[in-house]
Every structure is written in structure tokens, then in C-alpha cells.
Length: 130
Length: 313
Image 1 (cartoon, helix red, strand yellow):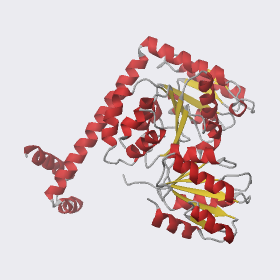
Image 2 (cartoon, helix red, strand yellow):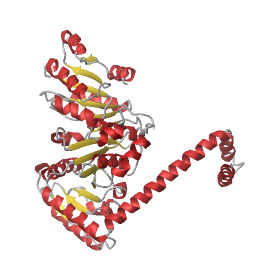
Image 3 (spheres, rainbow over the protein chains, first blue to last red):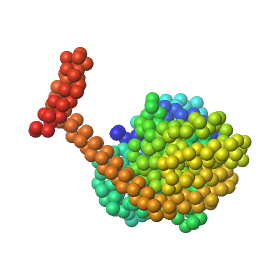
Image 4 (cartoon, each protein chain N blue to C red):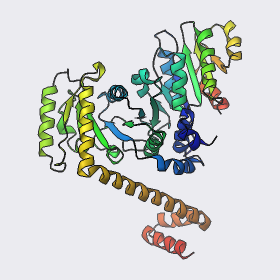
């Protein structure tokens, strides 16, 4: 049995729009990944704990509310605190270009903004997952 | 890190990594299981099965909360189907269990079936043992949504809970054999929906006709899982079942049967691997396949011949 890459698709924050997250989840499934989807309005603590219990290789965060500068770095921090140092964390949603460098410094490996094709995301994961 | 040691010291990360090692068949998986096995056998394993949309995830969530109220710790394995085409899966059972995520007395792991057809994943029984060794009092196993014949859970659980809902058409007729035969306890979920009385009556009649479980007549409990109604009564029914099963000797018989089955299938696997390894040493297996395909040789004689050769070495 070869290793299956497991991905947590999570929606932190308070916005109620998960169409994007669902489209991405479906595309990832079709690319052969095991996708764990936890639904809307998850706190950083819930996301980090779910990532630990599921032993995921990748966390894909989707956020449209504008709270990314606060929530994304917090999630990275909690994940690292739990000893999961090799998890790839990526983000997506309505995120201004100006915010991206700081998010990357905080440990978000890549940020995908509206219009990104799912193939781009899949290729990125395949190239960078540990 | 030594995963088994860390796990036994209470590390949740090690617990999680152990399940991954077993699921992906990493090299250290067998060593981990060897170290953990002596610590298993204490958890009460409850299987939760039923058709898609019956409310298994919601009921699992509510039962887990009931056990937490009783002061018990709960491990949960939630299984969803793997796509036969891509090998990928969307594991979405956690959506109904988000309130349990931060409870340190609970651990939820989602698993894809990865080609297994019996309603469980290939490594479910190992994952149960890992949660058991970690020390959870109760392990809840939520199967994929099942039709008629996905009954592997009965070989894996101490108690099998079958969840049904009214309104699936001519319910009982459609699922008479198979999953209805494996229930130790039945739950009729969505009991506020139309058709619940008829379903209840049909189920009672069917259970009355069933002679094979004469020592234990499976009880039927109505629940409305999303409102939490009937849950403590359901937990009570499960408690009675396990007490009766222990008293009648059924409990130990089931566990012995399970151990026997597991040992035999491990032996089968090991023998299979051994034979395949010898085959590759053989070298010309492709030629043998071709000659069987051309009807120059017959497969039965070929298998006898190969086995005789391997055993002579």
C-alpha cells in the first residue's frame, strides 16, 4: 500500500461561504488525495486539533472574511506547537496581494487567490508535500 | 521518536502517527502493533452502521457525548468511501462532530475504505487496537453508508448498532437479509418523521421471527439524533446488551472468533507474500501465464506444480 497524501480542508473564521472550499476538496479527491473536510466556522484551535487527529500532510485554509492576517498565522503557530513541523500549510480566498508576503513569513507556504485553477493547487501540493 | 512508547505515555501525536503507519503499511507498523497488542482488549467496541443518510455521524456524535457525560473516554473511527477511480476520498463525518474536537477525552480519526468492500477500511481493526491500547474506554466505529451486504462490522465490534430511518420505501423488505441480521441493538432515527410506527412494527415482527439470536432479542430504540432525544436510553440498551453478552459467554466467544479470523488472515497474507517472493525468483512466471492463457497448460496443474516446487526447496 503506497502512502496516501491526506489534506485537511478547513474554513476558519466567520464567513459562511464554502463553495470554493468544496470545489477545491472535490478536485483534490479527484487527484487521488484523501480530503478531510470539517465544515464552516472553525476556530484555529479546532483546525489544529483536527489536523493532529487526522495526521494530515497538508492543511488547506479557505477564508473570505478578511481575517486571514490574524487567523492564518495563529493556525501555523498552533500546528507547530503540537509538534507537527512537517505539515504543508496553504491558504486561499479573497486575500489582497499586499498581505501575501507577511503570510508567507508567518509560515503559510503559498496563497492562492480567486481565479487560480485547481490544477495549479494540485501541482503545488504534489511538488511540495513531505 | 518511538511511536509505541510515546503513545503509551499518552502522546496524541504518537497515537495519530501510529494509525498512519498502520494504514500506509510503513516498515515500523508491525513493531508498533507488537508493542501495543498486550495493552489491548479493554475497550468496548461499538459498531454503528446503517444506510447512507440514516444519521450515523450525528448519532455517533451524540452517543460520544453521552459516554463523556458518564465520565468515559471515547475513540472514534469514521469511515467514508474511497473513490474507485482516483483513489481519493472526501472524509466528511467530522462535520457532525466538531463540538468534540477540542475534548481531550475524545479522539476522532477519519479513514477511507481504500478498496475494502465490507463497510470498513482495510486497517480498521488495527486502528481500533491502537485506540484501545491508548486507553479509550469506548471505541465507536462508524461504517460507510451500507446497503445489504456490508457486514464486516459484526466481525469487528463487541456491539453492533444498526441505525434505520423511516421513509426509505418498503424498508424492511429491501434489507431483510444482511445488515438486519447483524444488529445487537437497533435505533430508529428521525423518529419524528412519517412512517416511524410502520417501520417499528415491521422491525419488531422481523426480529420475532429471527431464531438465531434467541438468547438476546435485539431491542429497538427510537431516537431523534439531531435533538439528542432517546440517546441515554440507547446507551442504556447498549449497556444491557454488553452485560448480557458477557454473562451468556457470547462476548468471549465473539472475541475468540475474531482472534482466530485475524490470525488466519495474517497467516494467509504472510504465506501469500512468501509464495510471491518465491515466484519472482522463479523468473518465468509471465511465460507460465501466457501458456495457461493459450490453453497449453491448465491453471490447476500449474498451481500444484508451483507449490510442490516451492515446498521442495
